[in-house]
Amino acid sequence: MPKNTKSTNNNPEFEKLLNDNKYFQMPKVGDVVKGTVINASKNEVRIDINGVKTGVVRGRELYNESEEYGKLKPGDEVEATVIELENEKGEMDLSFRYAGQQKAWDYLRNLMASEEIISVKITDANKGGLMAKVGHTTGFLPVSQLIPEHYPRVEGGDKNKILEFLKKFVNQSLKVKVIDVDQKEDKLIVSEKAAWEEVQEKAVSKFKVGDKIKGKITAVTDFGAFVEFDDKMEGLIHISEIAWQRIDDPRDVVKIGDKIEAEIINIEGTKIFLSMKKLKEDPWKNIDKKYKVGDMVKGTVLKANPFGLFVELDRDIHGLAHISELSEKPVANLNEIAKSGDTLSFKIISIEPQHHRLGLSLKALKKPSPGKAKDDKEPSAKKAEEKNKKTKPEKHSVAKTAKNKEGREDAKIKIKTDKEEKPAKTKK
Image (tube, helix red, strand yellow):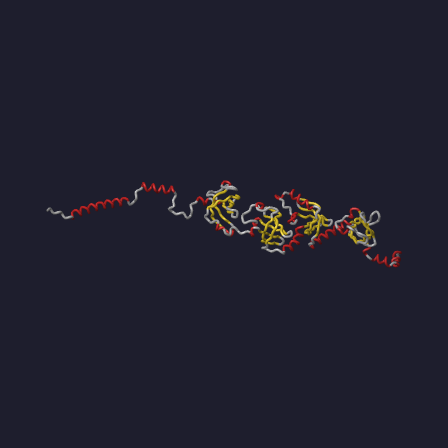
């Protein structure tokens, strides 16, 4: 009988260890092992691997992407990755880096699944967004995922100005949600807007369509103006809802800092849409008291478009002179007809109050009025007619002359007859 068999029979505990396969399945390089911290310092951490082997984590292998390994103390249970089965001291070299990476990405995936709102520190900025630290992993916060208050509304989209605006967030903490995790691509995307919308949904629930609000203009764009009201609530006034008249640029009517009143006209999720013009009487409602089809009016050309001229009749009422109503001949260049700022006379040819439309015409001014009497002739035609009367005898003039002559002959016969019928005077 072999010697070791006899000794095994005398030591039941050792026999038990021999029969437990896990003690004979030594880990391989790359395996993740579990152990208990023996001692920990800034330079190295020594770990007991199930009482069979001692492992050590040192140098750069101490740095990891998981908060779990930041403050270790004796007795803590940890996981580490095997990078060398035996070093110069006969210990197993381990790494927190690789094990920490896996734990860090697992943590990020859990954050995305739970939709938990977390606080992150902004470490850097570029023209596309902000860099944020989630644990030890660097994530990206795109410009499109910033809340309205932090969005860089830079006129003209100047990228250098956008970068300058974003840099002010470096070293600040923002509330975000993890919205995309891809370990293979080493991609982590976070969103401030997603976190804000969750809070916003609760705040929006207390408002309804038709509510009146008072707020301050915080930004003006080509398509409208943003208004801050209540407690950090924000709504959008579209360019078409700023005023009843046609507006080309919202900046002509409102500016940042203006205090305004508006009405909520729509709520879509966390987006609130406002209207300033709803709080003012519609000037088109009683337009028939000011203008009628057929009226000759003066207007100022606001803008020339390929399809015609936009004309201001007064502060509230604007009309359109379509290109087909500018001249009898085809118009190749509108600037030959009029340009912005010109004041011209027009004829109103249509009014549609319900659609806020008023049609104007230049060429209609040159046409005779539809209600003109037939005998209302031009002066030149009248002169020609009078001349014809002088040169041409009337058709009945011959008959009239004959009749007059006949009348004179009858008169002579009558006189003669009267003389013959008189009795002759007798001589005494």
